Image 1 (cartoon, helix red, strand yellow):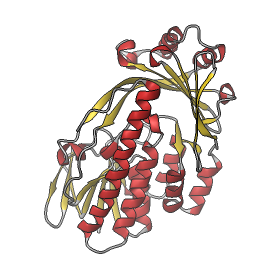
Image 2 (cartoon, rainbow, N blue to C red; image 1 turned 90 degrees about the vertical axis):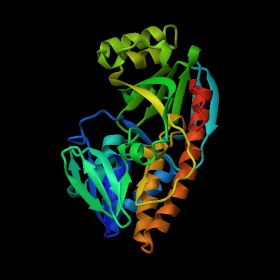
Image 3 (cartoon, one colour; image 1 turned 120 degrees about the vertical axis):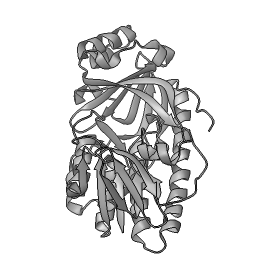
Image 4 (tube, rainbow, N blue to C red; image 1 turned 30 degrees about the horizontal axis):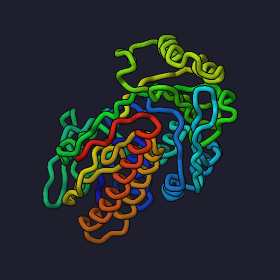
Length: 354
């Protein structure tokens, strides 16, 4: 069996590790020219789901090295008002870790680097009864038994395979950056949110070496051209929008660095589709806003479940159908939870109907 994977993000790399461990030939094609081309975020929250996947797809040595860099936050979500008066506490069960995204990606990349072709953007595919052929922008083609779209929210695989599956804006834009870890003292939770008028929200999360700080607001309350603003301009903008907030929050914004803007978008759940040799995982199937903290965990879960389904052997299509049923059910359930949390805490638009 040969599996073609479009996308070398966390899900695609986890899948490659699982398939390699099972002795299945895998070829990963990544449109970026290197793993460092784009800013993709900093801190990631791992729940039981993600932690268990890392146990199954990483070697003991890689896993131990990664966990040595992880941080264990208090298992709760806490919300404050702009004066830092506590307004909501949601207790979480289970295990929780905060890891650096690049450190996690490096761990997943280490043992499968030779399977990846960078600068290889998938433009389409042709499906046959006994194989699938992927086409790339340099004119090359690759034929295999399965094609997996792990190519994120703008998935080229999904665009051709499920043209009716839609992505929608949430009405929110967030600015992501880093602050010194010491500024997050007293906010060492799975996630901490400081919410002010108009759903303007400062979010804080700790890692071992730094803390992340985000500022979110309704898109209509922010100026255009955020992506060309300097760091000083972005800090100044948010300082103006948090005028009168607690001095600690103001200090966080004043010491903000490596800030970049991101429009928050979500998938719209669709009914199950007929199973073929083409399938999806992670954001390519069920992208969601970060309000449930589940996106990375579900991408890892999809990767583990798909590699296990293919490793079991037996007829291919039933194996893929079983995987897709679980992926669709869990993924779209998380999309709905994320949308509900986003509406309650962040002012996210209601999830459109399919």
